[in-house]
Image (cartoon, rainbow, N blue to C red; front, side):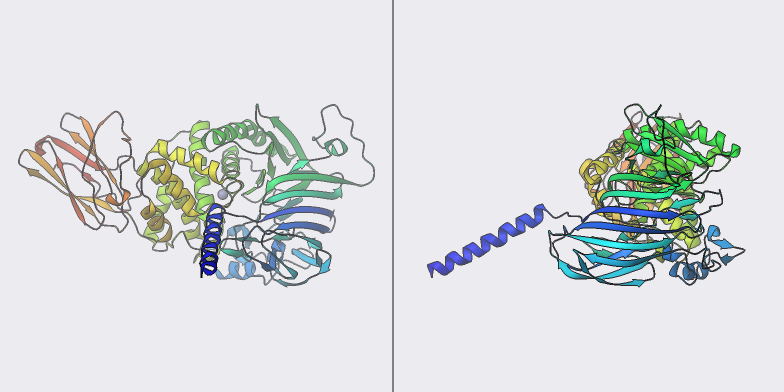
Length: 617
Ligand SMILES: [Zn+2]
């Protein structure tokens, strides 16, 4: 009996320690180390490569399968990307020619492909099956939790004519924009596999180190992710000043290393100008753009502003963790990559500068805080839009009182259109492109600007810095930004994350009536929309004196600091959400009240502002 009891106690103890251990290590992420050697034929735009991938399974589960993305297969007639482009009502104009799919028109030699020709796992052959843009691999042997396995692969690809983001011979005449170009292991995390087909947009990848050798025609200048390991053999503006670079043969082999990234992009062109700017106590900035008079002025203006923007983000989000950042002319809008961006050349400096600021901000919100964009597109596009609006206001000459005005305008337009879908929608599964764009960019930016209204501006900026510090080099999820804001502000915000991101509930508060109550005044407020909010109310008297009233939302369990420190603030009783009306008593006769305004900051996204103010007849 005693023995048995001892056994039970022992078993219980073991169970308890495993539980504790599990709790301690509740966050995990997979790790990859890529070594690639790639040969590019600049005449045919075909390339071959070998890839060694050391994969660490840090998950608590055994893996029997892995998946790779083969993104270039999207640029083929009949692909899922082509089908969706033809099916969607507001197809991306860049991908259409006179209303018809440009992908459908690609010939054999113009389309893209990426095929794996052989694959081994720890020396043993494994079977694999290409399903459009995803390679399904049944492993030769399972990878146990905590173990590492090595894949050795040979692959071949053809660079498509540029349709979107990557490709050859862009409109700006850039030869090679090489993003999403290699077989890229899909991410496996606490939610399982994320082997999304490439249909329209958004990427997700595994954190790790890259060691990449690119061999191509020696007249081409290359830029992109990673530090060049052999600058003095390469030249092209990378060599130590004063070095005489001697090259042999027709090609050069560029050797790059990139530590802790989740993607690897490169671009190459024989006519790139290569400028560099060494920031004080900061990274080296590289600028690669076509040697053409029409771009020169713009690209000279962009350079010091890139340094200013980098400074702004370093201060307001957290230090950029790499020693290098490259702004490279691609030829299709702008897109963010690890340690770099590809943007269109443009002869108008304004739009190129705006794009540069946006894409640079993605270095924080996507390339270091690597959210799954396909699932939480608002966390990278929205947060990037928010911080780049602040940055533009700080570093450019044109200032605006509310830098988020366009985001709010876009969101109100979307609500009115009746086409809104919750932000929790998968990026590819919006009914059309319009509701995706506005939900991701505008409503995503408002998530933060409005959070500032709810918890206070200083607390918002502290939340952003803490979020970066706590989740850099990880895959944060929506709950992480909410919990960070809760920890910083001490307020409960579950309702905010839920209603704003998972539903299409809207905010509409209004002033129902203002009536005399003896020598006091009663303001009857009403909640018309389903979404809860705390309220700031400005009261102006007949002499023009201003004071504010704060109506806390009961489920927040607390109050923000006074946002209008130069005005007297009265904290009124909580408003519990379920009550449709609320009575605010002002200690002044009605005759003395010249005006009442709900949310003077306009940061609360109230979809009907006509009922937000009162003025006596
Ligand atoms: Zn973006």
